[in-house]
Image (cartoon, rainbow, N blue to C red; front, side):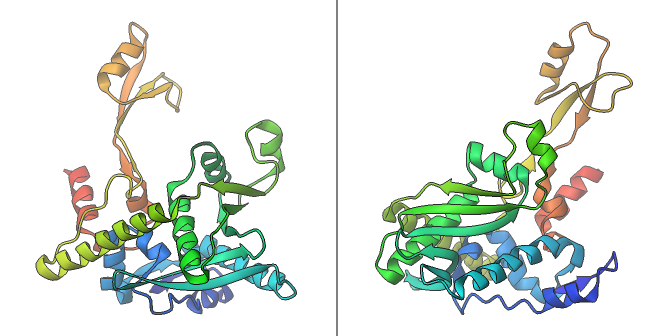
Length: 294
């Protein structure tokens, strides 16, 4: 990967990113790799030397990695947990690896630390977060196969980068401090293995299709973090919408005989537009951009 530096961020930060020591240990798939959309994983694999991203887009990843330094310090005199233990398990001819941040030896609680936003925490506590649930259950399966012991519970330890005290005072649902413990549903062993096999199949199928046809499976709307088209009910002199509705008919019904207008807002694929490092190589994204300009 190549880095640009549009905002003249200090060189120390650039060197920290360039010296990332992450390794999946030679596995066929890592836990996080399994969770990636097959198209994104394949494009990263194919175009890795050409991928360019700005340093500013990797700052939060770097801060997330700093949590591991905290865990290393905590583990210097600690014998109560396994910290950053990389695990390897063979499943259907494929070597799968994963590295949980912390596993308590006595009570078998598996923990993973995330540097994230307040919004993500509120959303996860209310509705759950599928990718966190999937990731930790993969780790739980790897732990069981590696150490022949069951995990008793799963927790995300969320460190909120944008938490502030004034938000807590204004909103009753706002987290009470900048760190939150989020319980994650624990699947049974059969469910964990079935999910891992499903993900392996998706990725190996993508590799076969690429080798045979030079094509890749398109990302789903969920994988693209797609927001649908909406119709905004607007009032003259006001910038924000009074109401966002999924169809023009519903917007007209809402307006009735009021002196309001309707503004069509095209849906966006949030991941593609600002969070995908390989969008420049993606035919699906190019096609969507072309449709917008037609």
